[in-house]
Structures are given as C-alpha cells and as structure tokens.
Image (cartoon, rainbow, N blue to C red):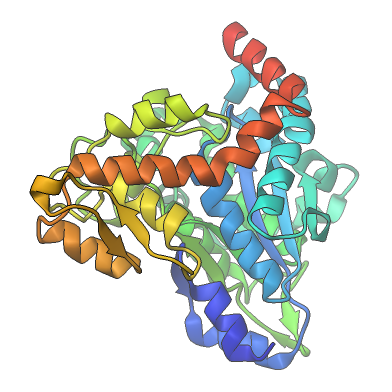
Length: 372
C-alpha cells in the first residue's frame, strides 16, 4: 500500500482533523513503524460514539499499517469519580466489558482485534519511576491557564472550585502519549486541546522523547467527529461547545448503546432531533453517514417515501443524501426510518454477542449501574 492509499484511509470519515496533514505525510514517507493510541475513561455502557466511531478509525489505522493501542484509563476514571470512584470496579469493567466489546466491534468493522494492544493505565504506571518523572517534567512546561483551558467546558465553568484532581488529568493524558511512544494520538475533536499541549511540550521533555529517524518530532493528532446527542436542543457556537452536544452515556436518551435492541434503536431514532432541511448537527444524518456511507456502496440506499410524495428514492453517497434533505425532498420521518434500519443492521452482530457469549458482561454492567 502506497502513502497516498494510507493517507486516504487515515483521513476518511469519521476523521474531522489531523494536526497536521503535512506532518502525517512526512511520517508515513519515512517508512518508520508508527504507533497510535486512543484512551477511554471507564464510565459505564459503551455507546456508538465510543464504540463504532472510535473503533472505525482504529480499523482504518490498522489497515494503513499503524500499530493501534487502546488505553483503558482506570486511574483517570478514578480521578473523575467514575463508577462511584471504586477503583476495583473500574479495573474489572475495563478488562472485561470494555476490552471484549471493543474487540467485537473491531472484528465486525473488518479489523483484527489481535492486532490492537489493550493497556490498563495502572499497569503502565506500576513500578515505572520514569513515567512519574516524565509527568513532573511535563508540568514544568505548562501553565495553570493552559491546563484549565484544556479541560472540558464543565471544568472551565467551575472556576476556583474545580477539584485539584481535574488539573492533574491533562498532564496525565500528555504523559501517556509519550510513555506509549504514540506518534499518532487519536480521540474525538473534544480532545484537541490536550493534544495541542502534547505538541507544545514535545521538543522540551527530557524523558521519552518522540523520535523518528533520529529526529525529534511532535505527535500528529488525529481527531474524529462527534455524534450529536439525539436530544440536542441547540447548536454549538463553535468547537468550544462540541463536547456539550455529543452523545453522553450519562444521559441515556441522548445516546444509542452498542447493545441496544432493534426496537430500542428505532424508538430512540424516531424521537431524535431532526428538523426539516437542517443538515448541520443533525444526529440522524450523522447516523446514516456512519452506518450507510462510510464504505463505498455496491447498491444504493433506498429511502422509502409514500407514493404521493414521489415514491422511493435511491441514494449513492452521503453528499447526495445531504443535498436531498436540504432541498426538502426527504421528510424527517423517512430519514429516521432509513437511519434506524441501517444502524440496526450495523449493530446486529454486537447485539447478538450480548445476547449470547457477552450476556454475562451485560448483566454485570446492569448490576453496577443499579448500585451506583
């Protein structure tokens, strides 16, 4: 596979941004075996943003010849008081439910689960003096203002009352990138501020310098799109607010979980925000883009419409779908029906997994959710 083909895989949907595209091409041209990393808090059921969107890009990177790494951030989750702040529960969920779910999704998306390394945060940190020296070294090159600015909007709004643990979080994220030699850190577009700080300190840190061909480099950050919440009520004014309108597992009706039954998927999508002709931050359009148009179609997507409104319409590309919807030629109800069926089709193997071999994992997660 040549560099152009590898670039196409890395840059295709759901990639939103690469910092920077030119640096990515330069890295690929070196022929160096590159490492990727994406980190996840352990905080409950996995929805399609975490599961399908993130893993779709992991699969793309695998196919592009990149070593993929999924980081299970148990210590970060504990700092953020996830799952009641019970570290034992967080670790158990990480190495069972999270790993097995991610492996199944990688498989159904055409990747190889065995080719992705899964790392538990506390295992990386255990008896690793150099990691903690790296973390302290990183803090020498960051200001309090920079760290606070990299937090979620919630953290920034808390002002002086912000827990000190929140401020430890961004330097930990940065240290993880260098400790894992992750040339290509990856996350949702809401992670870009932490990645920018990693690029900022890359030329200054003394431990774990990131080098390719004897030359020190900055990590090249890959950011994927966020799926808007199904119950979105207002549009963000810019990137600053994107994290506030994304699907959230803490608001179940805003999200579709990878284990949701077909009837639940339909119910949630039929009730989703989807104003006529509105294409920006429309979660239903985004679901169709993810489920029906990420791969090149061998047959058109058929949008079923009543005969009195022109009958069924064949759609070959997402761009065509968006234009038809913007022009009012597709009704929101018909768009929702198509999105529900396409997403159900995509999620069917995951749903079947949780009805069969993964049923015990789901039962345990339900028990944890009940007791928290």
